[in-house]
Length: 359
Image 1 (cartoon, rainbow, N blue to C red):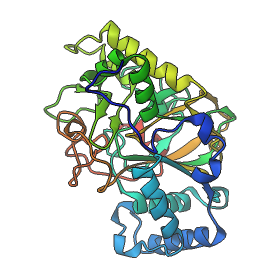
Image 2: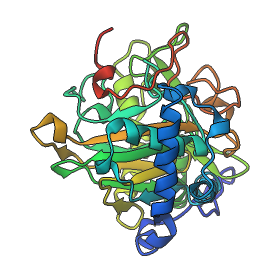
Image 3: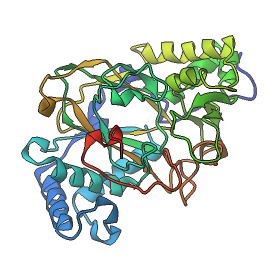
C-alpha cells in the first residue's frame, strides 16, 4: 500500500502516451496562413525599431489572430495536460534572424525568457557543438548523444526546429505525474525516497557564494498535485565533485524505476519533430527525451533547434526549493529563473557557437 503521506494525483496532466497518440488533434495544431502572416509582419515591423530582441516593448506585441490561439495553448500548458505542438512555421522561406524574431514573439505571449546557461543566453541553440558528453561541464543539448528523460530549469521549455538531422533525434515526452502515480502504486518506498533532497551538479555554471552542486528533491507534492525536477546526468556527474553527499543504492533504484516507466510505450509519447514544428512543455509535469542523431556533414545542413526557457507569473504553485537561492533562484515574480549567474548581462545571440567561444 502507498504511504499515507503521499497520495495519487488526479489531474489532466496525468496522461498516458498510448492514449495521447490517438488524440493528436487535441495537442498538435497547424498554424494558418493568416496567423503566420501577422506573426512575420509584426516581427518585421519590430526589427525596424530595434536590433535587440531583449528590448521589445510588450505594448507592441499584439497578435489579434494568433494571440487567441496562444492564450488557449498557454492555459493548457500551465494548468492542463502540460504540452502542445504547433506546426507549419515556414522557416525555410525565412532567414534565421526572421525566424528567431517570430519565435521570440510567440514566446513572449507565453512567458518571460530566462537564461539557459552561465553566459546568460536567453535564446538557446540546440545543436551539436562537438563537445564530449562525458565531461562534467558538458550539457547534453551541446552534443548529438541521446538525451535521457529529464526536465529543464524553467516553467516552460519551447523548441523550434530550424533544421533536422540526417537521421535520428526523435522527440519523446512522458507525464511525470503519471510516473509518480505508478511508482506510488508499485513501489511507494521508492516514491518516498524521491521526495528527499538529492545532490546534482550545477554544470560548472556556479553563481558567486554557492556550492558547485545543489540539493533538490525529484518529486515535490503540493496542494495542486506534484512538481517534478529530474536530471539524472546532473546527479551522476555531481558525484565527481568534492564534498557531495553519496547517492544511495535506494536512490539509484528509484532513478532506475523512473527511467523504466518513462521507457514504457504505454507511458511515453513519441513524436516526429520536423522542420517548422514548435514543441512547448511544462517542465513541472513533463519529462522529455531525444534519441541520438547522425548529422549532415555540411555545417549549413546540421540539425538546429531554437530553444526558449520561459517563466510564467501565473504558473502552478511551486515549492520554495525551486525558486530560492540555494538552487537556481527566482524571478521577480517568484518563478524558476533558469541558470542565472548574477553580474552576467543577458544576450539573445543568433550564433550557436557563442556558447563555446571564449570572450
